[in-house]
Length: 114
Length: 113
Image: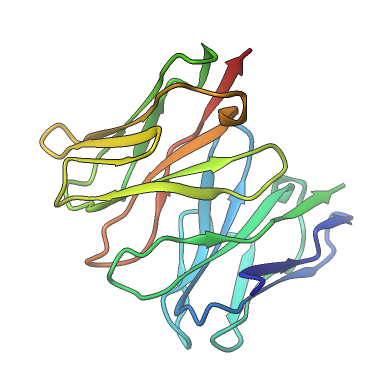
């Protein structure tokens, strides 16, 4: 039981390149989330998917797109990477919408954009 | 939207002493308050959570208190140990309308041996 798995763990991009971060969970959770973590700013929600087939913007969605591919997988895409998107990206999942269940995090993707 | 403020940003304590971290939130409809611990280079991990129908919850050396009237909640760690050194995040959410967690900026706790 791996929990939440993110790939890749590290990535360096050049400005303007595109990239997709992958996330998969094996806990049969309904809800999935993408956060970015920057020093001194905690975790900020980029996009979330309350259930399969739905996605919604979070606090900082600009420059990103997401796809809820199926119940297990939720990907985050940077279409044209910018240095301001250098960050650590965490994917998370939780079981049942509307009942405030804990969110479980993956190990993160450390992304640097030059 | 919800705004969560966390204090202090850094906290240094002597091993064996207690540590207290305080958070305030803005949305009176928030009803779920988890705390996460993040060790250097690792994922955030849930250590304790509290829902709005209780005022206090304990788990061994960790306790959380909630004051809904004042809209603040606190994490208490007693008998601190070196392995308690980490960044701690509070968060709040309103499960009625959405499932989004709003996080505080974090507190870096250092336990001195």
